[in-house]
Structure formats: structure tokens, C-alpha cells
Amino acid sequence: MKQITRNLRTSIMALSFVLLTSTTFANSKEEKKVDTVIFKVEMDCMGCASKIEKNIPYEKGVKALKIDFKKQQVTVTYKTKVTNKKNLKEALEKLKFKVKEEASK
Image 1: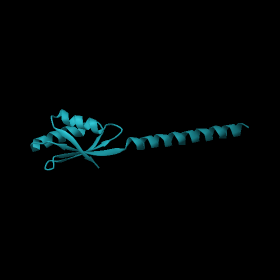
Image 2: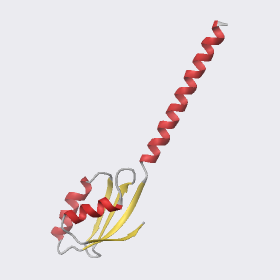
Image 3: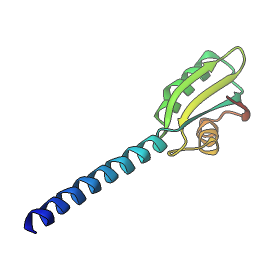
Image 4: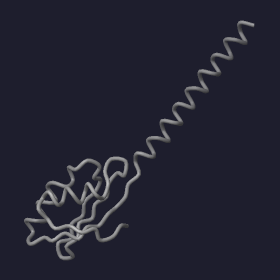
């Protein structure tokens, strides 16, 4: 009887461990969701592009940044769990740029 109880406890502990690890792994996948947004940003010179390049990558959740000065576009890839389009737009506006969301990829 003691052997059965011991085996049952061991099985329950192993099953609990597997379930806990699976849940943690599933949650970590959710946190890695990313989205991309394209903003139309009025930039007058390459200094403006440089200002964006120096500041926006440090916003929470930003994974990638691409600036196209000729098209006046800023493309930002970000973690959806950490930030959103509104926060990114506000970050650009704090740098004194006129910003309009253009499209998403």
C-alpha cells in the first residue's frame, strides 16, 4: 500500500510539473506577439530622422525601427503585450513631429 501511495504522489508531482511548464511556455508565446505600424511623419531633414532613430528604439516594446526619409515614413515593429500604436504615436509627437498613422503590415 505504501508503494502505491508513493507512486501516486510521484505521478501527481510529475503531472503537475508538466502542466505548469506547458502553461508557462504558452504564456511566453503570447508575450512575444508583435505587430507593425507605419506612420507618416513630417521630417524636414536627416537630423529629424536621426532624432527618431536615437529615441524611438528605447520606447518599451519596440523591436525594430525603419525610417524612410524620402517617403516620410517610420515603420515600427513592437510587442503588442508591452505597447500599442497610440503610445508609439505619442512618443513621436513628444519629439515635436506631426504624425499620422498610415497603414499596418
